[in-house]
Length: 220
Image 1 (cartoon, rainbow, N blue to C red):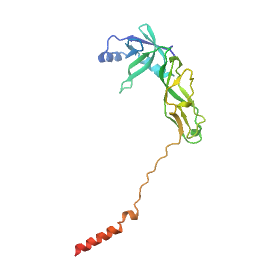
Image 2 (image 1 turned 60 degrees about the horizontal axis):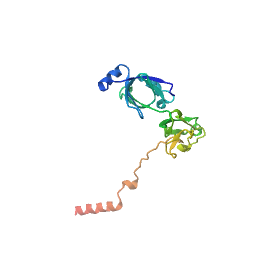
Image 3 (image 1 turned 30 degrees about the vertical axis):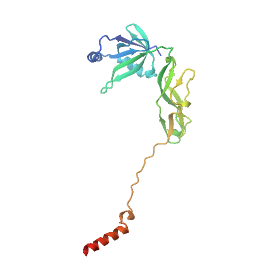
């Protein structure tokens, strides 16, 4: 949880040119904010942020940000990537209080292999990749797990069926929303090409009779 420490340095100078030089030196700019504190501009090593993002708890990881010797418990709240290089260029950190509930996005994890997939040729369709919960920072789970082993084709799991410790975690999503389901693969639709029939291509008798009368009148 808060055992990871990331070293940060206060940025006295800000602006595009300063940030460009900062990135060239191997660091990225960031901002620390939170309830009751004045926002602080900092710089951090992007490799430290990458390690946190690729940990088991990802962006829900609580870690200590050491700002020139002063340590705070923080979360990564926003990231900016270079659109061409896909590298980190900026990070926002939110200072937190461990005794105050917060809202988190927790990933869904399917456990097992669904019966409808193994024997029925179905597909497991994950509709909701994350679940929104409210809890104390220390109680946020890394994943919300769903055992799909007994699910057959047509079966669904809704938010109301998710298993969490209700004494610590409150799910904020609509209980009726489908989280995942087992479905049949979409069948390929064969477009039917209409073949013209003799009746469709031939002229109606009334039209042919009218044409014949016009031709006779022209001859006279």
